[in-house]
Amino acid sequence: MMTASPSACIELKEGTHVAKVVLMPGDPLRAKFVAEHYLENCVLFNDVRNMLGYTGTYEGKEVSVMGSGMGIPSFTLYAQELFRFFGVEAIIRIGSAGGISDDIRVRDLVIAMSSSTNSTMATSYDLPGIVAPTASYDLLREAVKAAEEIGVRPRVGTVYSSDFFYHPDREVNQKAKALGHLAVEMESAGLYLTAMAERKKALALFQISDHVFTGEALSAAERQDGFREMMEVALKTAVRIDI
Image (cartoon, rainbow, N blue to C red; front, side, top):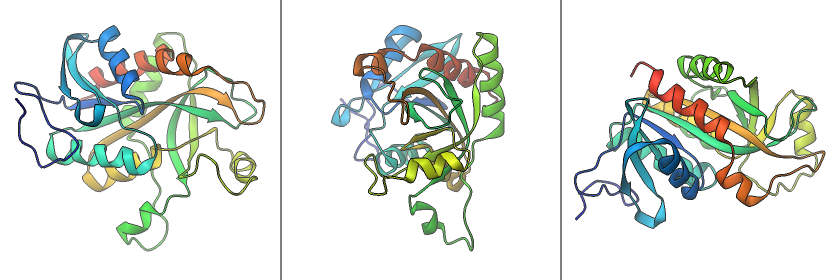
C-alpha cells in the first residue's frame, strides 16, 4: 500500500517517510549501495520508476538516500519535489565527475563551492543579470572538516555543470579549464538553483571517475560501488548539520 502524494515520481510506501537530509547519487544502485553498507534500520520508501529511495540512520541520526537520474532536468524534478512535498531541508549530491584541471587526479574528492553552467534554467527566475549557483556554506564547511578527519584532502572550487554529455563544441572543456574549473558534471548547478529558489540547503560532492585530458578512467563497477570516501564525507556532513 502506498501513501498518496502530489508527485508522479515519488510515492511513499506505507509507514515510511523521507529524512530532513537526503543524499542523492544519480544511479539508484549507488543509493542502494549506500543504504545497504552504511545505514542502520533502513527501509525502502520509494521505488517508482526504479528510482530507489531509502531512509535509515547513520551515527544515530536519520538520513535518506535516493537516486536522481542523469542531468539537470531529472535531478531537479526529484530535488524540487523532495524540498516542496516531503519536508526535506538539505540535499547532498554524491556523484562522479570528469576532471579537467591539471591538478586533479582520478579518485580525487571535489567539493563544488560554485557551479558554472550552460543550462538556461537560471533565466527562468527572471533576475536581471546572471544568477550564481553556489553551495550552502554550512554544508561545505562540515564536508571539508569531515574529509580532513578521515585523511582526505578535498579539492574545493568551481565545477562546470553541462547539459551536454557530448558537447558540440569540442573546445568547451578546454575553455572551462582555462577559467579554473576543477571538473565537469551534469547536475550541481540545477541543485544549487533549486535550493536557492526553495530556500533550502545544498551541496555537491564528486569523486573523479575519469580525466578528460589524460584519458585515465574507472570502470562502471568501480563508479557504482566505489567512491567510499565521498559517501563517508557526505554521511558525516548530513548528520552534523543543524537542520
